[in-house]
Length: 312
Image (tube, rainbow, N blue to C red):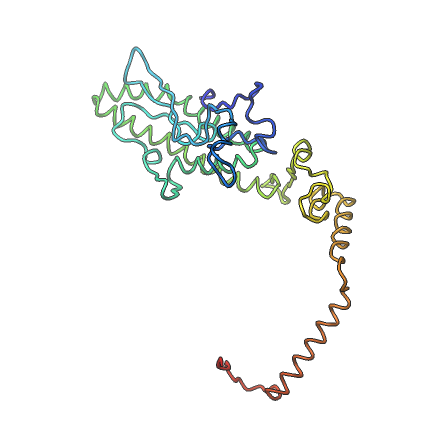
């Protein structure tokens, strides 16, 4: 299963490294298609490596066979991309597939569908992959290790059901065990998504949820990426058309940088031929003129409710 989740990590082809992965190490590479001024000829001249764990996988599995007892055969089955899914045992000797694995449509999101819940995990974790991946891996390991530890006792009990009640009793037992494993995996992945949304959003990582005061840590972009996108270039040099204050404001939370950003914003705000004082005076005079003209043409204010004036 680790092989299924591979993005060539730790090799020269590591898809979580370099500018192609963005600032947070996203290994996904979307399918190339003409877009705007990007033509098919342009696309044919370029390429991305294809990951083993591809983001648009519908499902993946690992078959486990027992050469001495076919009743023990099962699949480690996971829907959606391998690196985002949690594998669960599905026994071959079953009459039904667990509902979480048998429902779902691309026409509508369904939180009870294993595909959709892992699509949530995968798409959200991809936004902050470097930071979120360890939490995803931890849940995967906990759920799969727990299931793996239970398999031996489950298969022993299945054999006992077969001896005492025949094949139907064994099949019924293994069907229920598949459902139990699938339910546990689905619940864990659902809770994982809730945690990821709570912990990673808006450029921050939030933790220490059981304390009186939350721990909030900035996960601002890495320096190498900022250098590549021209973060350290002035607005005039970069040609992005944005005022300098827009670039400087998010640089740091330190007082020096914030003060500098505020100063630049004030400077930008004061550019022009009309001062704030002049503008304020004009607004006040306009308001007084409006009151005067209103009383002149419509009479003095009264406490009587006159309703809406019909449109002419």
